[in-house]
Length: 206
Image 1 (cartoon, helix red, strand yellow):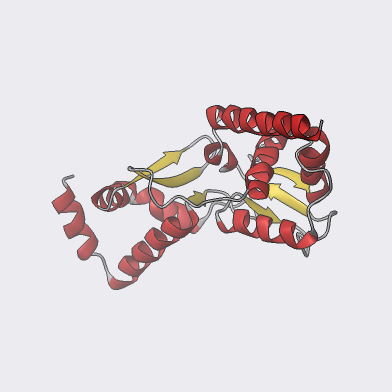
Image 2 (tube, rainbow, N blue to C red):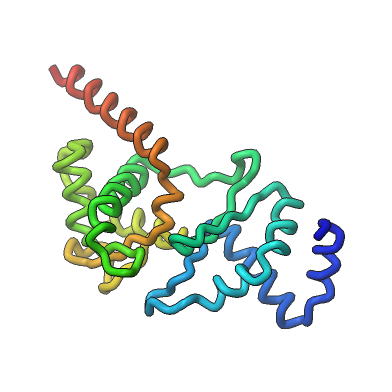
């Protein structure tokens, strides 16, 4: 189907379907990832809507400089800017937390059930960045952690099972979208950067 045909198909949609198309296009632009399995481990209606009209979404996003991708194995639909624009700038804590969760996901997903999700706790993530990475000499504040996890939740990388991310015992689910947020290559690059920062800090303290 040509781009022109796709645009005609979109414009000829019934009003309700057209509104859903616009809502989900905007949702992907703001959240980056759309997961097949929802919190009840049922197939998301939003995911099915995009999947069934994937070619139309692909043509629509390509027109404005974006690409849409679908991974059937992990049930993740994601978008990416062709020119690398519109990327969110993360602070050091958020970057390190994402890396810690990526590593935890790799460590636990083999033991997981048929679901692609992995359960962890705020305390386990903090333990990774304070003890394993030794990047932070003390635990981040509850407010810092709360803000960091909310950013990641907003981009469909995690969701919480308990009341507040400020609670160290709060359980959270790491979603398979983490694999696409931090590729193996990016994971190695971040680890190398953090190791270099740690070595420089040690040299300065000496």
